[in-house]
Amino acid sequence: MPLISQTVTFKGKIHKAEDLSAIAYFHINNTAYLAVGSDESKKRVQLLKNTSGHIYEVDRDLEIELPAGKDALEIDIESIAFDNDKTCLYIIGSHSQKRRTVKVAEKTAAENRDRLTDDRIEKESDRNRIFQVALKPKSGKVKDIQQVDNLKKLFAEDNYLKRFVEIPSKENGIDIEGLAFQDERLYLGFRGPILRGNYVPVMVIPSKGFEKEITDYEIRFVQLNGGAIRDMTAVDGGFLIIGGPMGDAPGPYGIYFWDGSDMVYGTDRPVPMPPACIRLEEIVPPIGDDGAMGKAEGITVVEETATGYRVLIVFDSLKDGGPQLWHIHKP
Image (cartoon, rainbow, N blue to C red):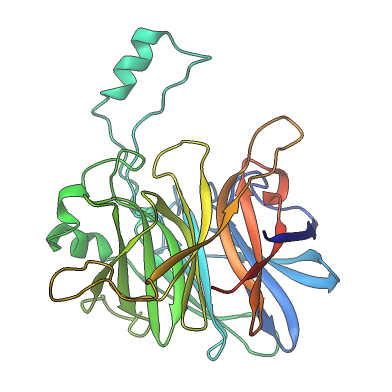
């Protein structure tokens, strides 16, 4: 079983404090930082500085610039990754569409049934972006911001994804919630769709070329016991993934190690030993003061040793994301 050493403390005003969905741990000039973001934020990521022990204090806001003259609706920040060599943050929106939700406490049953068939599916283009934020190595101040916004075009032409482009998220439509950087590539983990056989797509794109459209990519598949990718982060030899429900169910959640290889097997590609994906731990979400159960939304590695990982996990619906530090044994 993992050891939850203690709840990490965030000091200062956290933006959209009960809706944190993304977190990344990194160093600037030998000082530890966290970048945190919310899926309810219009265009803001916050940098928190480690002040002592497990305490991180809000250092500054990082405003993401959109095209000139454009009023941001919602970037829908779902994951953040960091390139240590280039002191560079990568931030991704969900690339999703949404339908109005059922409201049991506010609407009649007939009204809620209508909402389930509502044709007014919201398409917010600000969600369809990946940002590359270059930071100055000594100060951590923003040096440059580039962005890519053509992935939806790739989805619409891809044999695996094109059927799901017009479907709302949480209904098995396109929904990106994971992002990891490794070896000059970005790995985009999907919460939806989940394909037959419980195959979850991961899109692999080059981390270079943010001044132009992405054209080169690869789709790999991972299996998470029927679950979806809720977030992912790079480690030696692969990735740690939070697996959980594709929809709005409260769980279950688990932490998986995936070696990054495609998991569609056949007679020409027999199942390898050891397996490409291993379930390491079950995540039991904490309960908030109001009785709400957290939903595991973000993961980042604080330390990796020869025998295990120290990871920081944040949860939706909890104050400041209810950050917890976990010690997990390697497979």
